[in-house]
Image (cartoon, rainbow, N blue to C red; front, side, top):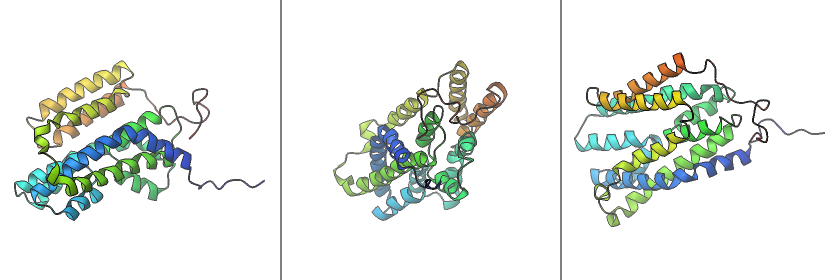
Length: 249
C-alpha cells in the first residue's frame, strides 16, 4: 500500500490556522489602515508605506518609526528603537522553541519573520491541546501578514476620506486587543500573578528606561518567574498525551 509522503502540506491545519486568526483580521486591517494614513501624512509615499509593512511587519515599531521620522530622527536611532521594541520577541521565541524544534530550519526562519504578538498568543493557546503543526502556524501568520499589508495599502489609498485617527480615540484599542489575547493564557494563579507583576513593572519602568527597553525588562521578569517558580518542564503535547477526542491537525 502506498503511503503519503511525510512532507505533504497539511492544508486542513493551514485552514484552521486562518480561521483561528479571523477574530484578529479586522483589527489588523483597521490598524494597518491607520498606519497607512499616518505614513502618508508623515511624508512617505504609498509604495514606501506598503513596503515598510511588507519588510518590517511590526506594528508598534512601525508607528514608532513614523513618529521618529516626523521628528527627523536618524536611521541608526530608528533601527535601535525598533530593536528595543521587538526585543521581547527573543523571550517569546524561547517559549515557542519546544514547539518549533521539529520544523526544518528554512521554515523556522520564515516563521520567525512572521512572528508577532497575536500569532504567538493564538498558536500558544492552540498547542496547549494540540500537537505542534507547522502548517497551522503558517495559516495563522500569513492571515495576519496579508491583512496587515492589505490594510496599509487601503489606508494609503483611502486616506483622503478618513478622519484623523487621533479624533477617533483608537489609542486604547491596542490595549484592549492584547488584553483579549492574554485572557486565554491566564489559567493558573501563577500566570495571573506574573501578568499583574510584569504589567506593573512595565508601567513603572516606562518612566525611567528608554523607549522599548521597559518591555524587555518586564519580559525578563516574566521569564525569571516562569523559570524559577513555574513547572520544570512544559513540552508540546504528543498524540499519546492529548485529551481524549482531540486529534492531530
